[in-house]
Structure formats: C-alpha cells, structure tokens
Length: 393
Image 1: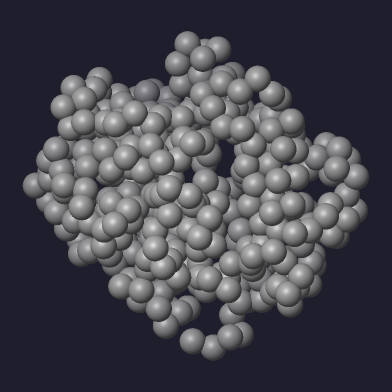
Image 2: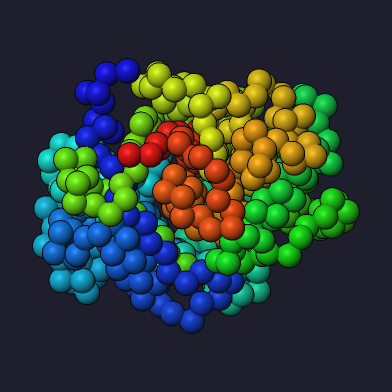
C-alpha cells in the first residue's frame, strides 16, 4: 500500500490517564488535566509543544450526567496553551485519534491532544444506579419521541433485541459468549488500574441478574470516573518523540440509517468500517497480534470479531468458547487490559487505544503479550463504527 495515506503522516505519540475508579473524588476538570499532563510527558513533549486541542463529546452533550470533560476553552486556559486547531465533537466519533490525525496530517497542528473524561461512576451512585439516558430533556423530540414510548432510552435496551436475534440466527448460547467477560476479567486481574480484578466464573455469569435479555450484568461495561488523553503528532517529528506508534490504517463509516432502532442489519455491525480499513493496508487479519475491540456490551465484541475478519459470520461464539484463543497466550489476545467490561467504561475506544499503545511499546507489565507488532483498535458499534491498525514505529 502506498505511503500517501493521510494517517501515515501522523503518529500517536503519547497516552495518559488519570486515576480510574468507581468513584474518584476529583472534578472532571481535574481528571482531564491529570490525563493531559501525563500524555504530554509520555510523548516526551512539553505543554509549549501542544497546538491542537480536541475533546469528546463537545457541545451540550458534555453536560449530560457523567460526561464531565471541562470545555475546550476551560482546559486551554488552565494549561495556558496557544492553539491553532480545536475540535469539540459530538456526532461522528469514529476513532479517538481520527480528527487529530487529520489535523496534523494537513498541517493545521503539529501536536494535538484529545481527551475523554467520565464521571459516570459518581453519577450512577448519586442516581442510585446507572444515569438515565435522555432524562435531561423536558420534552421528547426527534428520535426520543419514538424511543420514549417503548422505554428504549438506554443503549442496553436498544442493543438487546439485536443480540437476541444474533443468538437465534446462529444458534449461539449465553454459555459460549460468557467466555468474553470471563477472559477479560482474567486480563483485568493483571491490570492494577482495572476496577474489577477478582476472577469471574461461568456460574457467576449465568446467575447474574438480567438487564435486558439476553444481556446480563456482566455483559455491560462498568461506569467509572476517569480520564484518558491521547497526543497525536506529525510523523516528521518522530525523532523528537519518546516512543511513537504508527497509524497503519483507519476508517470510519456510517452505513445504513443512522439510528439504533431503525438499523437494517445488526448482524453486520462494523463491516463497512472494517472493509474500508483493510482496503488501506497490505496487512491481513492474521497479522494482528492483539485486538482491542470495543465492548460496551459483550455482543459488540462478537460483532467486531466477525466484521474484522478474525472469524466468519456466526463463528465468533465458537472462536471465543473456552477462552483459549482470546487469552494472553492465545491466537488473538483480546482486550488485554480487561476492556470496558472489567477495566471500566472509559468510552469511545480511549481505553482501548491506550492499551494498544502500551502493548506495541512493550509497556503493559504483567499482561504484556510477547512480540506485539500489530494491534487492532475498533470503536462503537451500531450504525457508526471506526476500525484501525496500529503498528510499532
């Protein structure tokens, strides 16, 4: 594949995270600053080098319960930055580093940092459970007008019918899919920052309360407090960076009708993004050493395994059963930090990207997979999806 791809003109140069926990007694702004400062230092840069600033989500969405970023100007002012490029993004979040990579590839910035901060753990505890989606609007309008009457506000309720359809179409059992959260919990046990580190058994999984059938408690990501920041730099600055990671290929595709309840074929989630990504590289699925696949719910991992070509349609359950193939010493180590199911919902593939970078650098500690050269990172599910390959520099 030619080297004229815009993503080849950018590198991921730094990652940083704040304290992560079910409830962290620091404000969203404080967590954001902690993560940014850590990411900039990790890149081998100083704040004076940062000229691009981005956040997700931007706009009014940043004010939803648990979405506690601190806005662009508040963060810029706190860090005393001079910026030439800024982005506050609500829709279109295909990958955390997509926008910053475009910015540095086109010369709009030289070193851009993007962050995602959540206080969903605290918000959930204050609300007596997970924060209510859509409850901030006094009148149901737009998509909410159709979702509210049938109680379909929460993502788990929106995804569950399609999960049930998948299990039916391919004769899949919950016992098979249980091996995804069970294996990821084993990986989380090696991650000191993971919120759940005690072993999870098959019996515990099957006995867990149902949230929206067939999705049970352990199929859902865990609300936490924490922030992740990623620095993306112009590739030409690589010699000045501590340990850059190459963006081999990436794509973000919105296909079908852009709404959860009107999606035509949830059995094909992510295929558009994956196909577009593979068209931008000579690497193939067999070349991937670790996979950091978005896991808002267990079923999303299933869909991504198939969309990325790690197994065929309807074959993911057999692929993960027993956990051997997706273990740290398996054929395709999966969500090696514990993923969002055990590591915590850092959201929008920010946690997945941070882990991919650590694995490629050989900095993942007790959970390090030997000889990692290629890491896959995917984001979201449903009608909007992002897929990427990161490689060692």
